[in-house]
Amino acid sequence: MLTIRFQAGDRSVQLTCMGRLVRGDECDFLTESVLSRLEASVTLDLSEIEFADAAGLGTLVYLHDQLLSQGRELILLSPPEHLLELIRLTGLDGVFTIHSALERCIVA
Image (tube, rainbow, N blue to C red; front, side, top):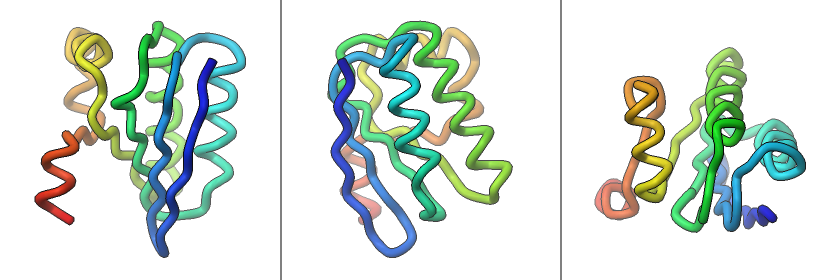
């Protein structure tokens, strides 16, 4: 199961994702949650994702492409090591904007 907590600002929103990012309802829920937002910048805090499959990764790619086509940005915040490894293995670390929680604290 995937749960999402929202924290919105004027031009950005952070969605904290908790649970599993897998094919089916979870990926659909994330897609609907992100695409329903109108902010210029969407940050997905993935630090509490317990497991992600290929469909979960594909959903992140889809969301990145959708936001990019609208002139918006998607930022992945603190993906867990298992998801980060999958991102690296597929070469998507050159596509996604990825920050650690520490980097976000320094920038903020």
